[in-house]
Length: 90
Image 1 (cartoon, rainbow, N blue to C red):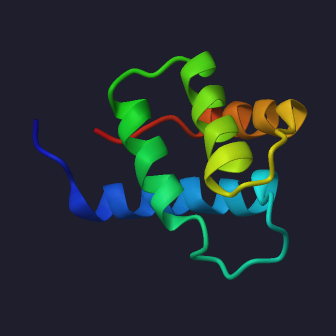
Image 2 (image 1 turned 135 degrees about the horizontal axis):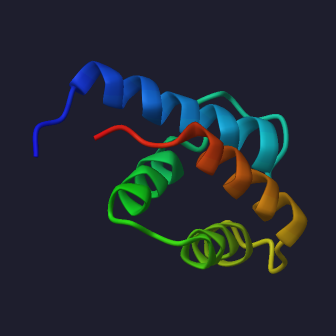
């Protein structure tokens, strides 16, 4: 599969923007704070992850990796809806 590097970079930046706008469990972070999460989510979407898998990843990131011990599922659903609206780049 051939990837358009420019289109992929734009798409991943859009994913990061969604994470900053609709997820942001830390609150008020620099725009690149969730860069690594955006990359993982992009890979998951490309690999055909379903909504439950994306939700599980967001929950792991927020509750365990960041150490908040809780997860806001409503916020997670909002992120997934925005990601699905965005689509994906081959």
